[in-house]
Image 1: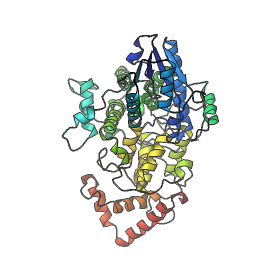
Image 2: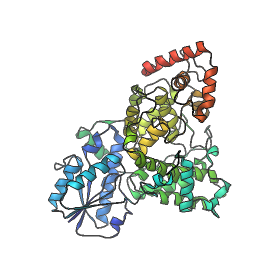
Image 3: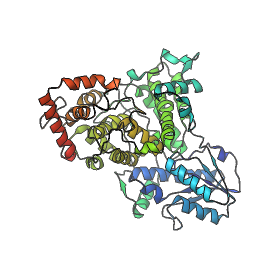
Image 4: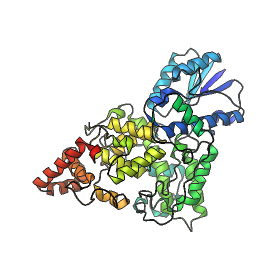
Length: 510
């Protein structure tokens, strides 16, 4: 008997494993405390994974495949990957063990070590999901000093003939990012989000609670954003094309106090557990665009495609190029604790209150909320990247380490010293006000640096630049802001730093 392992983020029905039925193959899927407990996860994240896993198991059975599913509350569950696999291998008197290459370094290491301990034959195969291999990015940038995503993205476009015409970019330019920065002011109307339906969410949630799993966040089975099956994931993608794509690019960076989802697709969970794959996603979106070119502008489509085949594949390549050392990088030597309001949402700062409470309620926030609100503040407050990593990995349903770590420790916190981002993504209140309505009814004045009602982002921003100016002295992209820093009078800068110090000392008072 051949035992084949399927991890919780390997729910790829299109994998070549499943093209034929084999009576001598048993597919093993397991829910484990090893995975629920290595970081505190959002309750909706755990429910989403377990629900998708259970539905995938049912789908395999319907297709005629043999499976062995270990639920979290199964009495035979050892709650550990290696121990469960030993049990299954012995139970079936297995002659061979096979697995798909994991996307997390820790699981890759664990399965290699486990396989080397076995007396039976073992093999590992590709997950057949990504458009690139683990090492493609490393090979592409060999000998180059900077790992610029834009060059990698253009290469991907050429390699897969995406949005090209005669070998040149459709529309005459590769990147329409400058078109993707509009503030949403109430129009155009935002459609309701696509909400997958499932009758097992409450049952799974109760089971998780009964097993004593410590989670975070809130739960509402009637407002659940994450597809549980491939069919639902494809429906969610269709819904995006038909209702949201038309304005996606324009407002992809926008934030609003009354809107949580705007025009985002919210398919990242489905992609990251492999219910759907990136190539079919971009092909579907581009096909819809070509059928509706009179209504949809190219900039809307390119902005979406760039996120999928540019940023997502790029981030994965960075992860495998730089691990395992990447996880320990702290280039700015930030050591402060994460404010408690990241776990509660209780803060007078409107932007953080909305972004964090949205995350606690839905296990979701779009990329600018993550980068320029929660990530921006934690960097300005000089939070230890280990603590902010754990928060991002736990709170978002789509967060798996390969995608979370380079986005957080790299782009958001600049803890990698510039491997991912050429400059730190920090801002004062002006940017937040430009891209959102968060500042409109905030307790703090977006225009003030000093005073009890001055926006904390303002003093923290100039304090950060002053504290870290030696790090960025040779960074051309930071030179203008450092010159502005030099123009602040000594007495005013001292007062700014005093206020910033008070905020950093007790952020939960603000």
